[in-house]
Image (cartoon, rainbow, N blue to C red; front, side, top):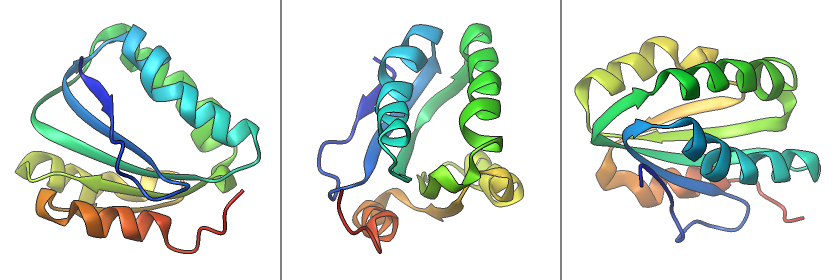
Length: 130
């Protein structure tokens, strides 16, 4: 398993741990369903994404799916995305997030792994329930 859900998230916050190389099936079956469900239910995406040291990116099929989903869920309805907390200690990923974070829909903020609780609290801030 390369994408796992973080169960200890505040109400209204989706949490994921990403390691290894993400496959198309994991992308379709683990990552996107809760995001789609939230958006289709009229909610705003608040997410915590913890990226491990052995994250290797997407396989080619998942990479293409991410581009398509970005067009469908990111670039189009920016208002559906509220906050994305990126949690990692990896130097290259931290640098990439600082450089490209502005491209993320909604607000993105970088946290260290030791700050996971603060990341979750930041993502949840202002959540008023369903």
